Image (cartoon, rainbow, N blue to C red; front, side, top):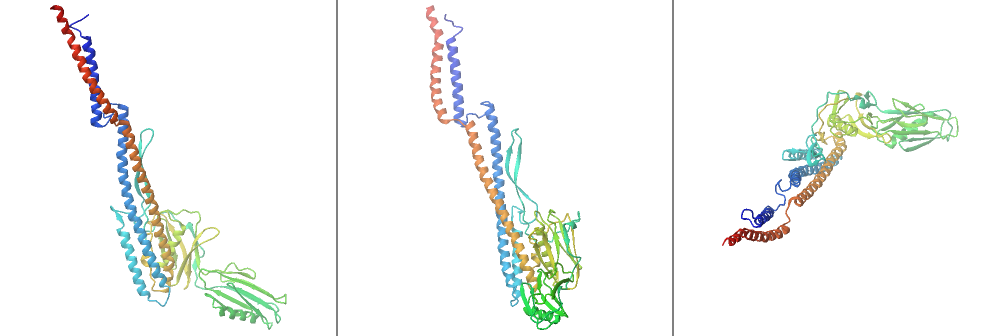
Length: 504
């Protein structure tokens, strides 16, 4: 049946042409935009995923900028700390030269002062974009990543870099909780008198009886020619003094041999063996003047210095303040972040040495068995009180605290400077090493972020980018289909006209 009201063939041809035109428009859109999913209408799920990933890419781009800024900042800090290390090493050379008395220490001190001023200049200038990593103690956080959890929440991750204070500030003593229990003084006073031991020779001696005495590793012997014990003591006193051992002298009275030691940081081993043919001869060692450790016929005359033994269990936190009092003077050190009891002991040593008191000498030692650190203080003058105090809550001393006080114009100053400069060099070396390690980590993270960003972009492309080869081929086919559809519609529209022939 033919109808002039309803042309089903034209309707089918029209719907087909519309479908072709729609597909053609979509293909042309893919070609013009380069995307198969350009709007949420194209594929809402894929579009939403791609937009989240695009937001992450933009975030990682900003993170890469942050990491690049951090790399530059750390490069400046590392270079500064390495330069400070080199300058301190040069300063050590001047200090070593000052150990010789037959040099112009005044000129050496001028060179040391110039190097010190240069160090201060380097530390002050070592900033990048206003941030100085070699001044202060506050940690610096460098934005390193965005972490997206399965629930969609996002959190930022940071690389924390510790500042390495290479300043020379004294610091501010704390007023918080007492820390006095973290260190114990070996005595209430530091005496300047010698420690002594007495070897008492008694009994009956016969000719050819032999006595042997060992002092500080040197063995002495005496073969009796008389029975007078005073001769034995007198002989050994003269023999000991003839050795010229530093800080060791001897004297005799009747049958007693008194060995005196003013050695500050070294004990003197003493042993006496009779070796006489007459078995009734005796040799006794007695501890006097507070010397300990001497028993029977052998022992050690204690070092003259007193010490402060620091706790092996107590933690050290930033701002912990310790004060050593020697006589009428007090010497402070305030711990920085990450320091230990060794650092506290060395800091107090530098504080005492920096005061330039001629009568006091110091050293830091560690017990080989317990690992306990101690600060030893020797007094070559009148007896002085000796105590330790401490409080929390202070402002840390600079990492190169005491640098400003190095003075090699005196024997005492030159000696203390040699030990203290080693501590400062180690501080600068540790700072450079820490910055180098952090810089390597930041550089690795920056490389990873770059590769991660590329991977995310590739993933987004695989989701939304158009396949241009397929689109080109599809466009050609759709253009042919459009032409054929237009022709089919034209033919279908001609069908009603054929009905006119029925009425002619």
